[in-house]
Image (tube, rainbow, N blue to C red):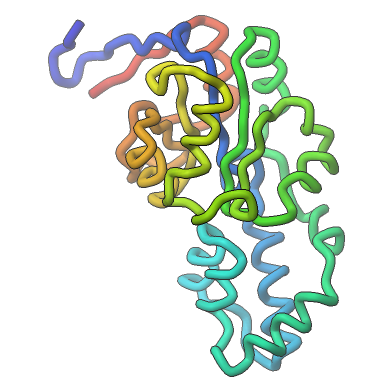
Length: 224
C-alpha cells in the first residue's frame, strides 16, 4: 500500500530472516580503539596524531588502506615493523558494545533470524567476538582477509547470501557509512542505516533498543 507523502506507513519485519551487521560503528563504538591504534603507530614514527578527516577514513576502510592514507609512503616499511610488534589485545578493551546489543541478539536468535558480520577488519574480528562472548550469534563472519576485495566490493555480502540461501529481499545489512550503503547497493541486499540519517536506506535505525522492539512487534512505522 502506498501512503500519502508525510503519512506513516508500516514496514513489515516479519519477512526478515537474516540480518548482516557491520562491526565498527554498529556492533561496537570503536572509534576510540581505532584512534589509539593508529596514533600509536604514528607516534612511534614521530608523526602527529591523525586529523579528524584521517580518523574518519581509517574508521571506514581496511587497515592496509588506512595505513597508506595516514602514513607517508617512505615510512610505511618502518610502520609495518611497529605494527608487527603490536597486538590487538593491547587495544581491544577500548571497544564498547552498542547499548542494547546483547538483548537484540537474543531476541533475533529466539526468533530464528540469522545473523552474520561483514566488515573491513582483517584479522581481529573473531578475536573481538570471542572477547565479548558473541561468537555463537554470527555465521558467517566475513572480513577483508577472506575476500578478494574489501567493501564496497559486494563479494562478502554475496557469499553470505550464498551461505544462507535466502532471497535478498528477506535479508538486510545494517551499516553506518557510505561504504556500507554502496556495498549493499552492489550486492542487491536492502540497506538499513544505523544512526546516520544522511544515508539513503530502506530503514533508519537509531538504536538497538528500537530495532529489538520493532522485531518483537513485527513492524515499525515509517514517515516518508
